[in-house]
Image 1 (cartoon, one colour):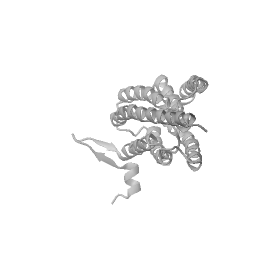
Image 2: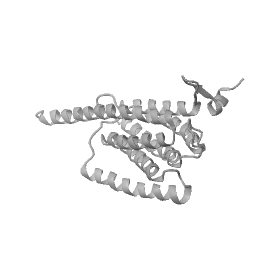
Image 3: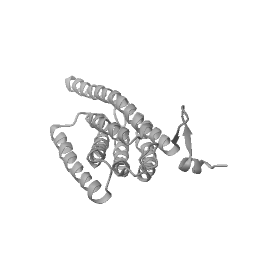
Image 4: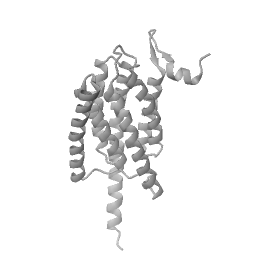
Length: 231
């Protein structure tokens, strides 16, 4: 009888029509979705939950064992899981520190805000440098399939995760751009289940953007009311 660990590594989940999906692929994406939901609510648990998904999806992308027909790894997708883990540790630490300091007035670990123009410039520079570095890594070292799109998926994902850690509303907009490219790339690779999850993420990201935008307005309004109260 297959153990839980063996099922996680080698097991499949049947789907209507006679097909099946790899257990790690499905569960890894579910952890990613749970992390996104927790992140939208600005709860610290978003980070450790996301880390579990990163580990599972890394093993899937690095081995090419997705529900598709291309049997070679997608190194951009795999590599971003490693960078996700590294930036997530930073985000976990930052949100935990903010939470211990009192957190946001609405119960979230942090109070979301729009980045300043200087911080947006920082994101732009990091994006250009990150894309160039990712492209060189994928073409010169790893020989990745589809390095042009894979490089943006890797660099954009790092930017979005960093922006989330900093509490910048703009990180949702970066995620939208990543999802647009990610869905296209995964459909071309015939990794339809993960492409479908990316498409669902795109819808969720739009909702998350609206939620954080409204929360940032609440923070601004509260600050303005505080300033208006006579000392």
